[in-house]
Image (cartoon, rainbow over all chains, first blue to last red; front, side):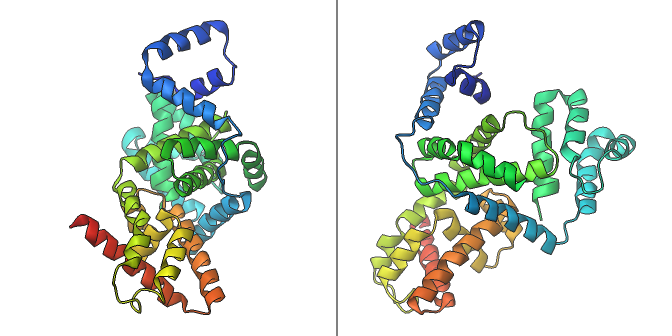
Length: 143
Length: 184
């Protein structure tokens, strides 16, 4: 087991209390991989390392291109809803899936915030998070 | 959503880029990975995913993405492209490639490994979905990579007064030849 990246980031940023810090340092003393990870986080925080990052225009162009492609392929909220239902049915059953998805807005802009807490009840938070990422891949990202 | 991305980019893009670079030691791959992380953020937020700590989330996505790529065939194929310039100097019929090896080398240098790979697979007739599977990336990324590659080639073609089709065909021929060389 390794330290979660988020926790390591908080440690690197000096945001942990002394008890948390102590347990992290205990782990770091015997785990070379986590020490390496911490070292990379510290390098990332060092503005002395200059590499050319993508501009915000490039980042937004990617996002807009993705949206345009979906429109071109007719991926509308109903399609996404149907795909998500197909992913959830085997786990929740048709009735429960319909009940959960009934709370989703017509444009699906609350889809993941509705689905993830329900899945967390059955699977636990960590597994629910991973499952939602899988749903995003299969039901949302795919064209 | 654009404003949210704008803010996050301003606050974290430089450090994410440095982190990605520390992981993969390749500036263009790191830049691709950072774009992928922001695209993923955009997609998931558009569908209402609650992300309490966007900075840590972006780090995690970046790390997962690069880790997947290190272990995928796509990552191994990137080595192919690094040698393209040398291959361009080998005695292929230049008319079948691009107008000259210097041009080929310059264009290859301007494309990221993923852009070139995407272009090659596309010209082999693969769909966006199939390219996504082959390269272990989202379909949205495929279209973004192709759009970027085409834009670079289009500008180059305009500057040189040459045909875009010839440039694309030449580059893809180069990439295919190199792949054959390394797999044999």
